[in-house]
Length: 401
Image (cartoon, rainbow, N blue to C red; front, side, top):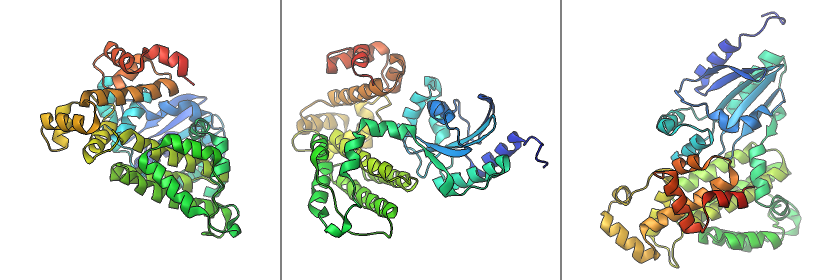
C-alpha cells in the first residue's frame, strides 16, 4: 500500500473484529461510519461512555470504565477507531443490566442486549493494547509498545474524587519507608475487621486519621512494590468479605477485576487511590448484606440474591426456589432473623440503588423505574417516598452531584 493511499478501514476492522470477537467501530469527522460485531447487540454499549472515549486525542490509548471493562482507541487524523468493550473477567448480570440502563437500551431489548454482551470475548488488557499498537502502526506508521500507551480514565478519576482522593493518597502509601520496620499487622487486622463487619463509617473515620503503613520490601522497585501490596490487600479483603457474608464468586470476581485494573496503572497515586476504593467497595458490599444485630446465613443468602437481581422484579417464590425452601418458610424465617419482612427488605434495597442512580446519573425517572423492575413509574415513586420521605425528583434535586 502506498503511503498516499487511504487505508481500507472497514476491511481492517472486519478482520480485527473476526479475530478478537470484540465489537469495533470507525468514526470519521466525529460520525459513525462503520460498526462490526460478531455479537448481535440492539444498542452499541459504547454509547454509555461516548463522551469520555471521544475526548481521547492521543494516537493510541484506552478508556477504562468503572466496571473494569475497557475500550481501545486509535486516532489517525479525522478517523477514530474504537474496539471494545472487553475485560479480563466477564461482567455479571447486574453489571450488564446497569450497562443497558446507562446505554438507554429499550426495555424490550434488554434481555437480548445482556445475552449478546455475555458472548463478547474476554481478553486481557495487554492483548487489546497489542491490537491497538498494530492498528496504530498501520494507520500512523508509529511503532509503540505497551509502556508508551497513555492511561485515560475519567470514569475512575470521578470515582476517586467521590471517595476522598486526597486523604486516600496520604493514608495508603504502603511502600514508603520500608527501612523503618513493619507496623502492618495490627492495621491489617483492623482493616479486615472493618470489611468483615461492613463498617463503612469506621473505615471512613479511620482513613481520615490513620498512621502511614510501613511494610516490608516485596519488590525491587516502588511501582512493583505498590502493585504487590495491592494484590496482597485484594486477597485479604476478598477473604474478609467472604467471612462477612459476601458470595465467594462475587468476592473473587471483584478482587480479580481490581487486580487487573491495578496492573494496567503506572502512576503510584492512581494505584493508592484504587486501593482505597477497593477496600471501601468490599466494605460497602458487606454492609449491604448484614441484617440485624446477628447476621445469619439465611439473611446473607437473601441479601446476596437481592444484590444479584436488583434490576429485576424479585418475587419471594423465585427466591425461595433458588434457596431450596418453601416460600412461607423463607418469609417466616427471614422475618424472625432480620426483624423485617422480605418485601420491606427488597424494596429498601431497590430504594438504595435508586438513590445511587439518581445521584450519579442523569437518566429520567422512567428509566430508573424500568431498570429497577418496578411495574410503573408511579409505583416506583410511591415506594421511594415510603422509604425516604421524599419523591425521586426531590431527592435528585437535592443530592445530584
